[in-house]
Length: 79
Length: 296
Image 1 (cartoon, rainbow over the protein chains, first blue to last red):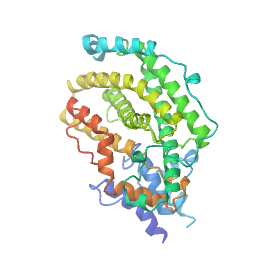
Image 2: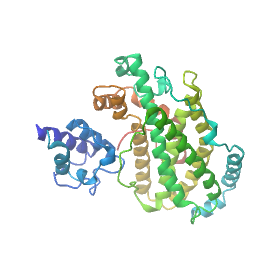
Image 3: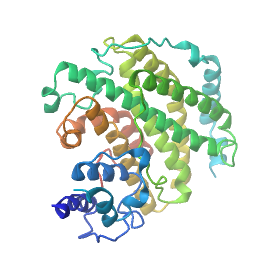
Image 4: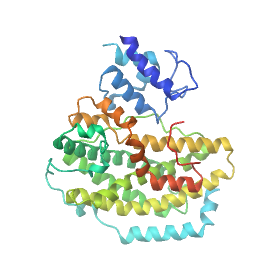
């Protein structure tokens, strides 16, 4: 189940980058510009919907959003 | 150089003088000009229903009248919160440039701009805190993603202009809407009056900044500007669709509603209406190649 739901985040990233076929779990999403300041908010909402959590914007730690595996650990581990 | 383009542009210099003079003549004390009742009734439109994100959609038909009123209340708090965050960002950018090289001539007007924006930020925040008991938070993004440093000022002032024109579309309609409470109409009316000066200034400045960039830019650099500006417009429009608003209005699955609205049939027309004038201006100046707002 967990892998299916984190795959929704992966699918969202790929949907915005049709030139890409895959995103590795340890690929840095921000350095590789797969996510930038204009798409970051959509990433947050995509995680909220997929993990069924509400993310506190005041407590956002950018480290939790750097890679797919960091996102999985921060928001999907409790599922 | 931008400063030589500005100083040789008699039209812009004349406009700057007129706008600065108008700012002085129209000056008001924002801390005294508004009446702030202790509460506003919940059973009323807080925002023109046509401007709410569910208007004309199947989702609106599933909501009761009371839920629609609640939605308009929280959407209005979101709208003013967006104003507060947008003003903070534009104040930072304009303050960074006032009395610096290239911006010597518009600095006089920047003083009025900064002063007025600070006051707008105050009354929008006051409205949110008084009647919504909060400001909706902004998702902290990375620093502004600007394709190249030499176009930074162009993109900064284009962003400010897009933001102001989006807000003004709402302000103009709500100022004239007799269904809304007088306090709500007033803050929209006052803001609309001040912003007409800021928009007039922004349109002239952006045109000059773009002329400067275009004189040396490659076709690929111009394409990147087109993509960035359109992405910023889409981002700004989508910030009106806030899942926390839907949650506060009692919607059970706020993320699903947001997705339904953003991918639904009503969105493209709403977006076109909001940006009708802005798209026409940006295409006319050549900053964007066409008026199609699609992610690329």
